[in-house]
Amino acid sequence: MTSPHRYRISAYDPAAHLFEVQLRVASPDPEGQVFAMPAWIPGSYMIRDYARNVVSIRAESDGLDVPLTKLDKSRWLAAPVRKSLTLIAEIFAYDLSVRGAHLDNTHAYFNGPCVFFAVRGQEDLGCELEIVPPDHADAADWRLATSMRRMEGPQYGFGAFEADDYAELIDHPVEAGNLSIGEFEVQGIPHAIAIRGKTHVDMGRLCHDLETLCERHMSLLGVPRGFDRYVFLVYAAGNGYGGLEHRWSSSLVCTRDNLPTRGDDTVGDAYRTFLGLASHEYFHSWNVKRMKPAVFTPYDLSVEIHTGLLWVFEGITSYYDDLALVRSGLITEKSYLELLGRTISRVLRGSGRLKQSVEASSFDAWTKFYKQDANAPNAIVSYYAKGALIALALDLKLRHETLGRVSLDDVMKACWQRWGETGVGMPEDGFEAVAAEVSGLDLDDFFQASVRGTGELPLDALLQTHGIQYHVRASSGSSDKGGQKLENSKQRGVWLGATLTESNGKSTFTSVVNGGPAELAGIAPGDEAVALDGLLLTSANADKRLKAYRVGDELDLVVFRGDELVSTRIRLTSAPLDTCYLELVEDVELAVESRRMAWLHG
Ligand SMILES: [Zn+2]
Image 1 (cartoon, rainbow, N blue to C red):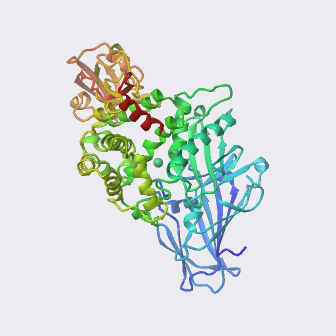
Image 2 (image 1 turned 120 degrees about the vertical axis):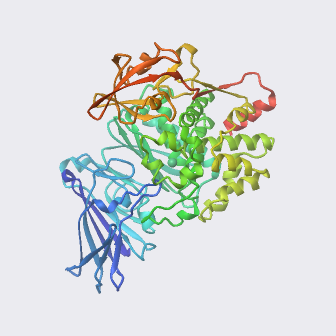
Image 3 (image 1 turned 180 degrees about the horizontal axis):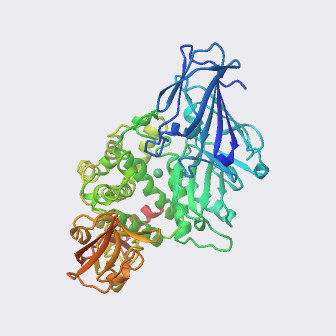
């Protein structure tokens, strides 16, 4: 036990959702030691002020209390001491998200930024961590999963762990509870998946499929230095979706039904969703966890750090997450094109794409993408979805214009060699420069229009060069995610130009499209739907009700705004062609066929 920083976290009061965290600093700053809690967690670009969950805090040295002064929302100053200094805090943990910490009688989960104080000025020193189980009978069977290097204790048991420095300490989320654990190897490297939540998962199949998928990713950019283990921590919930990437692990939340069950060997929509999520977070092991924007090296976790490059790190990752599924043979070409059609539809459905560039969306992620309000579809574009489409367009453009010599894979390999393997951050203009350098093409206009501009991407023409036919149609209603061909009769003829959402038995207009019929009728976000044309209007019946009308029909629309009844007239217009589906063109020339094969199968 010689680490300069010895942390101890105890799940000491699960009923009150309180962890106790101790931190012993061997050689505190003789001028007085400053401790800090992160304001945000890498990968999730929002100020969360984790220090707000500190319920109590004190310090001691040599058996005596040491005065602590709060310096600001996240920092404390301990008075100077001659010997080692120990900080002791109670931390409330009841945030069941991949960015949080959560403790109850069924499990203990935490991310380091939520529970561990940084020792200012000594962040580069080594850390030890002891994890102590709660003192109740139910916890006797708990197992513990984390990618942190183990010093003591049985595999998947409580015990002691170590990290090279504070940045690594907080990059290993920990899950303890009743876990289903599967193991597999990728290029000789041990991988594990630990699932919490009641499931009937077919673990053998899941491990086999993840191995295939991870192998595919590994073959693109190679094994990162020091990548000697990997753990997927999964919470299978009744309903949920999300993930957060780390260097040696990821935390995923999925809907229980997204996991494969015994006796089912198909890849339906649900399981494909899970595989896509796992694929996304695993690709981040390269793209954003090791290769990252220069402004993130190192992370300053006390304030917002702005970069215009999130479209590279999230958008390109979103492109490769689905592409890896078809390239590894887990899904068919048709299934992949459906996913691509859905991504295109998501972008087409927000007019924000015509107002905000992905560079601006990246830069303002902290206050816009992460703080979306009712006007978001009119004002912002997703650097995930449009970023993925820029990656697609760039990939197809490179393949086409270099006659198959260069693809996005080559650009990513060159970026990885320059900024991933070296750990030097990518400058803001780095990706574009490397893309031009590797391909020998002048890509200025392309990046100007697609990354800094708000023009439409030439996906129709680019897909055509790869034997894919691009179609747009009207949506069939609120459950239509796009990606599939539909009969004309199933498509929507007219629309309201607003989203109706049901909550607590009320149907509310949650967003209103700029210039659409609802906005022109004076409908505002938050209005509760009452009646259309004299009959009940709900989110559940809206699509069906609208089938009865034609373009140009003017109807009475009644809503509640607050507790006041508002009556208005709405003039229905034709539903926009905002839903995309893609088809493989049969009988294409051999050159097109081989280009398509190279793209979809690597
Ligand atoms: Zn991501």
